[in-house]
Amino acid sequence: MTRAASNRFDDVDDATTPGATDLCRLRGIVSPQHAAVYAKCEFRNPTGSHKDRVFHHMIATLEERGEIRPGMTLVDCSTGNGGAALARIGLQRGYRVVIIMPRGMTVERIRQIASFGATIIETPSTGFLDASEAHARDYVSRYPNSHYLDQSTNALNREAWWACGREIAEDFHARAAKVDHFVCSIGTGGTFSGISEVLKQEFPGVTAVAIEVDRSAPLFAKRMHRRFEHRPHNLMGLGPGKIAPNVREDLIDEVRTVSGDDGWTMMKRLISEEKLFAGPTAGSNVHVAAAMAEELQPTKNIVTVLFDSAWKYQSIWDGHYRDYDRADGDGDAGEGAHGA
Image 1 (cartoon, one colour):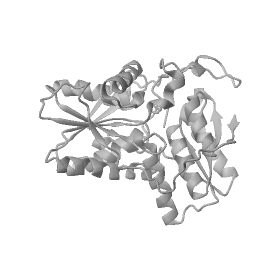
Image 2: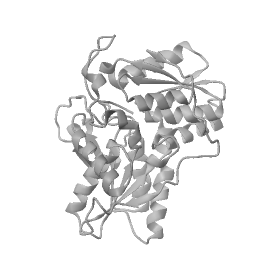
Image 3: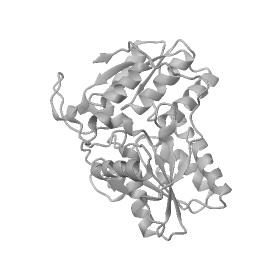
Image 4: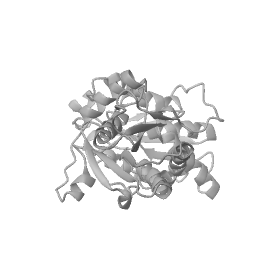
């Protein structure tokens, strides 16, 4: 199924660039008797997610290399955040954008992508992102003036997060403090790996904790020598069902899992207790970080990331993706959300 836009946002600002987001200490959810938890507010980027950093860096670098130029069609796979970020910068810089996404993503994400003028192609939900990626490869093989960015494997995804890692390090150096633990969920792996690279250089001894959805945890299964089985879940953006190439396993000191229900519950606590209007994947990061804080001394510092904005989930505020509970025209059915 293909969707094309008939309207666009009016407030696209060419001068607005991602980054320099604030680092907030969580004082309501985390007791002062426990370790301090700081959250990097990536949901305050231009399209409401951390993916603005990725595609701003990726397109700027590819243009410098001469690999892409305005007038071309840029293609990528996404469950929504990356799609919106790419659509926005594509509109700014004069590219046509095609986003290929599994069927069943939230209406807010679909509308946001389309309102930046991008074309959306939906693939069967049963194929998860694997089906979307196969469609993307086929698309660019048929259209010679197109370029598949492939955020899941493109090393520029990971490199985009070095700047964020430096921002965190500079903030702590200014406080004459250090980061003891970095806690972050894994989707494409770029955010976790890129920030971890920098923090491990800046703060020797920092512990990097990767988080996976309990229903789709290939890293956890690998380390525990268990058979991995992907199951649908309700944490859109995490748990794509595989270990993405941008995941640097050598940087991971520990893997913890989180349930979708815990992520959604903590999301609502972030809103009510911290006044941070972030989504359920941010809730997952904070759920694990807060649990770790209870295990550590109050002198320790934990850093995590708030990926995206809660408004992207308003149509499914109870955390249930009903589009996955019914068969669609292609005969695919299931529940949950998967991917980038």
